[in-house]
Image 1 (spheres, one colour):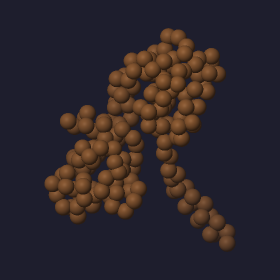
Image 2 (cartoon, one colour):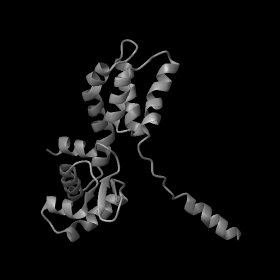
Image 3 (cartoon, one colour):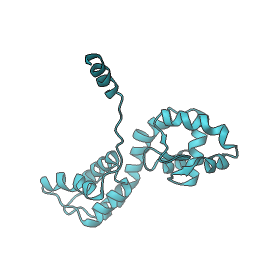
Image 4 (cartoon, one colour):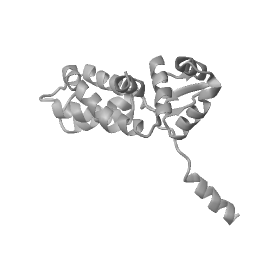
Length: 177
């Protein structure tokens, strides 16, 4: 019994919880509450713009909140401030978040993901990705498997492939026009 417990504990070290987007109310609170605690308010329009652009993704919310906070000159912070920092936030995410992932890819994996990006944020059928590449679906299965192992994509349903982080499709279209 003791041996089973020990091995069970070790396998627990390799469980990876899925972290997806925050619910809209939680995303709103992630921006609004810390600011309010420091005497700064946000308009509903500004909060909605941040949440929409970050897709509720926790790290993206932090980046948007950081840049908006630093650019705001008065309270309440409005949507104009969010619009003003948009290109700066995108550049920061490109250089410090997406590029790190992109640099880990082989040329073939980059082409596969770029084909996915051409189809939009996803998820996409494996056959549609293969068609976008102009190849048979069987020929891209090893690439897809490798990308799943690297944590770049996942399979939300049999035969479907989706990016693990939002906005990666947009990054790829900017990076590989």
